[in-house]
Structures are given as structure tokens and as C-alpha cells.
Amino acid sequence: MAAEQSDEALLAAHVAGDPQAFSELVHRHRDRLWAVAVRTMGDSGEAEDALQDALISAFRRAEQFRGDSQVTTWLHRIVVNACLDRLRRRKARPTAPLPEFDGPEDGLPLAEDLIEQRETQLVIAEALAELPEDQRAAILLVDVEGWPIEDAARMLDCPTGTVKSRCSRGRAKLAKRLVDLRNPVRDVVVQDLEGGSGE
Image (cartoon, rainbow, N blue to C red):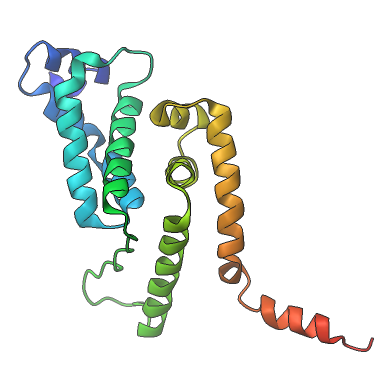
């Protein structure tokens, strides 16, 4: 049964002509592939298009899978590349999705809290968008998605040291850009210190 086969066996079955194998493979990994696309693109509509491009590419290029990484790593690499290609073509800033609302329930956040959350999402999305594409992709894979450096390096087709360097440079830029989110009273404290307390 397809659900019991490994990813590698499913991909091989797809290459051999099994019409269900690729669908099972996508079904197995769709949530994480979608998450990578949405976070990379910053827009659900663009993410849908990028993911569709990636899956069509994977479907057609399955015979090129060499087996030197896991199938899921190979799929993520194709998704990341499709997203980066689309971002290069788009050359526009992404937007953060609105918070989901399932309906009334106890403990709903106040409107002010939702507005503040939305503003925070926008600031973070803008900060990520300002990073060079290579740094942004590395940070999304390693820091947001939680992929090990080695897997991120395979997805981005570069050495592990390059991924570490991109993450480091990107984190430094984000830290400067988002300093007020980490410490919103920083400016007041700095002004107090600079003004002197006389003690």
C-alpha cells in the first residue's frame, strides 16, 4: 500500500509510472511545503502559485533525484527555489496574512491586541523582506522552519558554512531592525541614561 512505502519508494514508483505515488508523496509533506512557501513569499496567493510551480517541477524532474539527500529535503529545495524565482520576478514587498478568526469563543483577544499583533506581523514581514534573498531563505529554513544547517545547505545548494554565515548576517540585520519589538521602552531608558540621573 502506498501509505506504507518510504518517500524514496514512492518517488521511484512515480518514475516507474505509478499514477498514485506522487499524490501520496505530496499528501505526506504538503503542510510543511506549504508553510515554507507561505513564509518565504509572505502572501498566500503568491505561495499557492509558487508551490504549484514547485510541485509541477518535482513531478516532471523526479527521475533526476539522485538519492544523496532525503526526498523531503529535495522537495523543500525545489519549493524554496520556486519561491525565490517568483520573488525575483515580483520585486515587491510581501505582506503578512491576517490572523485567522474561527468565530466567537471565550477568551478572544481584544481588538487592540489583534491590531497590535497585526502590526507586529507587518513589521517582521517588512524586516524579512528587506534582507537579501539568500539571507532571508536561510533564516526561514533554519530559524523559522527549524531545519538543521546541513539540510538547509542541501536545499539552498551551498556549503553549510555559507548557510551559517547568511543566518548570522541576517540575524544581525533583523536584530537592529526589530530592536524596538524586543524592548519597546529602550528609547525612554536610553534618554533617561543620556540625560543623567544625577546619582
